[in-house]
Image 1 (cartoon, one colour):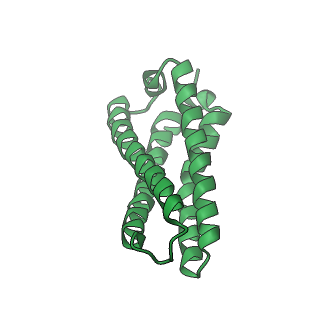
Image 2: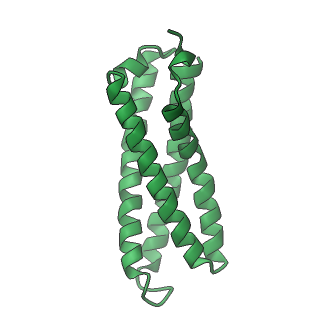
Length: 150
């Protein structure tokens, strides 16, 4: 079976969500700067939920296919792909954990006056999440190329 034969809808949708996430977050950041706090909160909540669903679906897909090793077998450079995968997973997991924590805490504190005492931390962590999503999109593109294209 060729590498492109292994692409399926779950992989494709998960990849698309990961690629779209930084762009959607950027638009959400622009909205909040214009005073669109409700739109920012809705966008972040929906994107985070869709992201978790995509990640969990992909994880199940990988498990049912025999684990990450089964995907890496067909990689053009298995050693590079394995190293990139480890870095990708580390950054992606950390990003999603910080993003989830930030969303939960922010939702609890949203009723306070804006900007509130949490605003500076929210902004700093939000930018960290944005950077993590950008890195995750770039690293998943590298994985996609190494495993399915090259």
